[in-house]
Image (cartoon, rainbow, N blue to C red; front, side, top):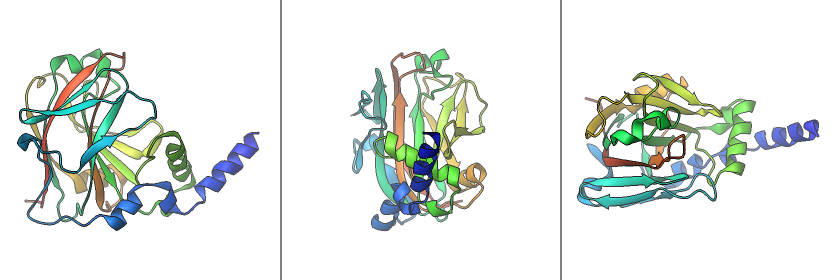
Length: 243
């Protein structure tokens, strides 16, 4: 039986790289955004153009996302899901991303040590055929076990209470998903924060290669490690050329 499983996985891993990810089709169908500033989210103006639910695991209770005031409010009572926008950006030309978020004090207690209370996620296009056997197998498994599968590479900006700011770490199941800790601890909870990152430089540090086109931007808040409900708020998201 073990050999049968290995043969099946080997067959899956040898399929053309484009079939392993959803990022390739987006890179070939989405128009490339341009201009001095690319507006990805205008939540402060009560706009959600192009944003839609992104369910990760079938059957999960989705997070509630709603516009209120000048922000997107996220509330997860159990389970969890994301909200995303399909958008194509060349981060070599527009590498600087800026966004705002706010985390309530109760969302960053012991229940958030492993599961960040806020995430801003980026999905990138790339040639999956050049990945090694192990990465291709994991991409195929993700496609089978989740609703959408994975893009070629995912970079997530997170708030952690147990890791120092600047830490970059991989998802425990696949190195194709990397996290960057941009806020740590509880000193700035209950406060609106503006975060500014050079995505191109972060991608290079995380994956050791040049990024392809960005094809999606998402936000996610889910319930705590102990099953407790959590809330958070997200503000506008933009991309610009480097200074």
